[in-house]
Length: 387
Image (cartoon, rainbow, N blue to C red; front, side):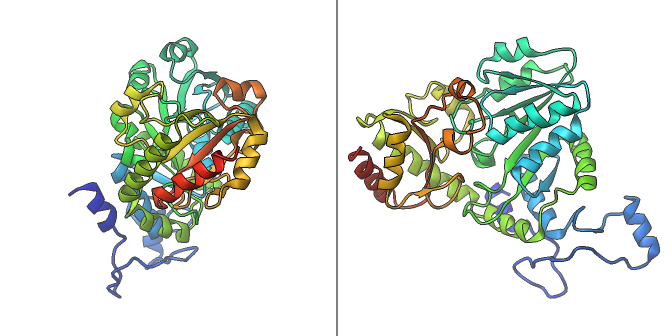
């Protein structure tokens, strides 16, 4: 059965009411037939629901779909994408361990690695993500974890996941890939050799800017440790959000095709505009890793970046001139969104650290939505022509 069909047909077990659409299980806890059943479920001798902090039918359905899409052995859902990242690190690392991470990460992920896990004696070395020799040179005897995004947020840098997976073979290093921008529709990192794949489900998995969520999928042995940490610390996904996210997965394939189609068309239309220093998009031949993008990804995704001449002053003017584009720090919505990373999502990084990953004062991230592409082209061109 094709994945698109499974994304629609995988459902929680139907109740005696014979419902066609899965109901919401808005309950904090579940009952047992008797004390012996309760004992057996707690002892994990038989399956069963206990408490929605541990598991819930709506959450289980969402996780099952994500594991199917990512070709994963096991998975776990979280209240947010950052909870998923933090729980993966905290569940698998201990004092004295060393992490090697790409320097092109979402701002909050960098804050976790430099200010939170560092307090516990977990060291992190940041490297130029697409330089495989830099990863190799950073490995120490106590290196336990590789972490990267591909494509990265917001610079759209790509990492050869298969090459990175090969590098750490035989070294007892866990490779985790943030697959938020690509989604399992565009690439499946586990098939390329990764051990874990992480998503902010708030973005494309939801797709309409409605709910928060996160998910980690991967090898069962690692998910067991992450599940233990999450079970006792409580970053659980609400049943309502899980219900929304599971429904959203039914259209993820179709949405990602259209996001990618619109983004490529808009990138081509804006490339060479006199007000724009550079346009970056994985499936534009001008992208420095275009060949890798075509090899590793099915489509180019829904994100492009524009480096606006004149810096923040011109970005501010652009944001005021656009008529149908939203100004927001989010992405992955049906509605096109413009973000200025240097002053928002990556504002806590130093100027030097931002420069190292291509975040200039003129850089804007455009999360291209599902509007008619003719309207998006007209809106951007009209605004840019006035700069």
